Length: 420
Image (cartoon, rainbow, N blue to C red; front, side, top):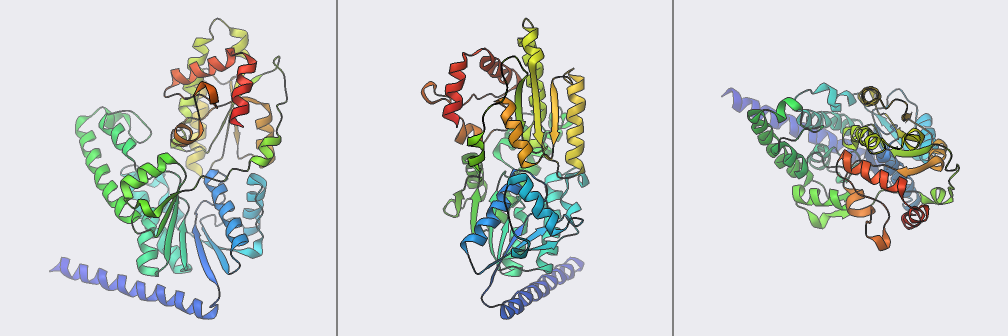
């Protein structure tokens, strides 16, 4: 009987919340009947990574294309003014948005989506936390159109069924994927599969059950979207498998402003340091440890060419969203010391757009250790149209870098020209 009354009470609360949120949206529509309010859910809008570039380019395009649109950005950066947020977008991405053209809704529950709060069942914890954060966003400003640009699909039902908004999402990386399930099943050590789990068949079985159940629920909430955008063929394949709405799912490659990049000319000569450059946020899926391991393996390959090794320097350029990313970056520095690479690795954190361009000017080799886009959409390895090299593990990465180092300069220039 107690469970029955609890269920009834829950239904009543949901119905009241739905009535209140839809009432708020209706009243605002009467006050400004010609405006369409688009709410962009991006709790880390000031982070300065690739996802934030997508956000600001989307804002700029929406404002340019639709005169009747009013853009609202849900952010958890409560200590930062709109002016400073927009200034960073300009400095980091060279994307200009006027303060008068956007409204920021500050959210105070962002801590509930941070992985550090959930040492166990992290995916579930963060997903439920995103619903709590999404409720705050819906309460403060129920939009006409809701767009999640950070991968919090569990917010979709809130805005579709409680607020009555049209719902969309831009997926950079699925919360769970078949690759993650396969790694757990194979008991492979990875950022999502800790050593004590990978070594224990019983814990592996429990985690597999949990992941499969989570994948089912993730598919249900994903299907609440009216339209979905994905950033690559790899992501598209996984989202189609999980959400099963292929007719609503569209591949939209992330915006890349190549106009400035195409003007860049290499500065330096063969007598100077050879820079290998990596660009990416300090997030687990970027797999920065693999880059350091690749350098460790490369040193072994160049054991008989010490002068060449001494000229090499890996420059890791990335941004940190919060304390967890800062801790991850510090761990990378510790790992570089553990591998005796501290004199061969440099970390550049939260650089400006102009500083990023300067880094590109000094780099001879680019390094990226996440699959997906580079594997399926970007890098071509056929000799006639080669744009780069592909690798799977540290040894293969080291071998590819060594090949580039010993290649005929004209062959490398041919690959660079094709890539451009």
